[in-house]
Length: 378
Image 1 (cartoon, helix red, strand yellow):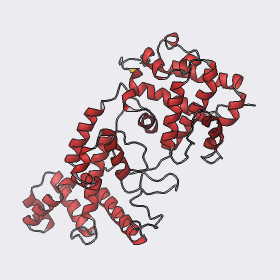
Image 2 (cartoon, one colour; image 1 turned 180 degrees about the vertical axis):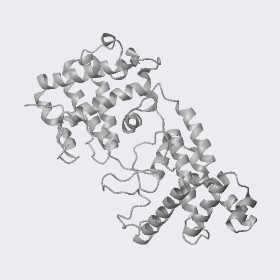
Image 3 (tube, helix red, strand yellow; image 1 turned 120 degrees about the vertical axis):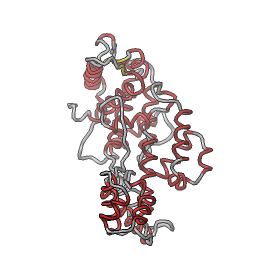
Image 4 (tube, helix red, strand yellow; image 1 turned 180 degrees about the horizontal axis):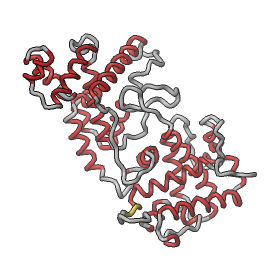
């Protein structure tokens, strides 16, 4: 059976994902020069038993990042084609297939070593279990079928993460299953529960739409700002949080430090804190707190990497929604336009008395705007 590189998409995507994860976890060594190098011992230990099965030594390739990855990719494809004809038909990628197909094909062989079935609706668990299975496999050729299947599942999870969309209004992400344009708060689908009546969903949608318009008028960026040591697509960096527990990632900050930072942000972000349930939420452990934040703020994201920027972004968003809630005076389009103009004048260096004269209003009015809209440029 011919097995092209295109058909090997899931496997190669899985290999690329774990390669980037190893670099993000601490294998990348910044010597501030070309070519980019890795800590060979860390890299081989993190990806074990894959380098050992493929007989790849980082030292052989001068610890150069791209050379090591290309060698692993070529050798993996060669081994699959020559030694694993029975696995080839299981892991191949067909762009015209539904996303369930790979899971259905791999369910039986994967269940040989696991009692729990592969739940299509829980891609995070599928990817993490696949990675754990790879790491527990013996360092010999007999493990290659398991490793290849595991890489395919990781590649499938990575593609799932990559295909997610951002809500057209707020920083949250959409439900990939419904291929919607909006998140759980602003979508009008499934009005079938007490807290998701058609009228309530429509109201949330309208508030989100007005808040988005206000953000655009005021030039406010509501999407999280993230950075990484590597210029790789964000979905690959996110896979670190999806697949690897924090204690395995030596290059990441410890949970105690992150927990302290999160609590500080929550205490200074009252709107987010209220959404999460108040001060009592701060008593949760790090993992529980992170899961609660994900569940409430962004349930269609597997894990909130760069959590600080997400909390800040949602605090900003909720403040915008407050300003445009129905029945709140000063939330109309005309008022937003006037406040936007006043904010531009303030940014240009005009004093409140000067702004009042230019706009034909009382100085006290400008003072009230400045107090009410201080987070939005005034």
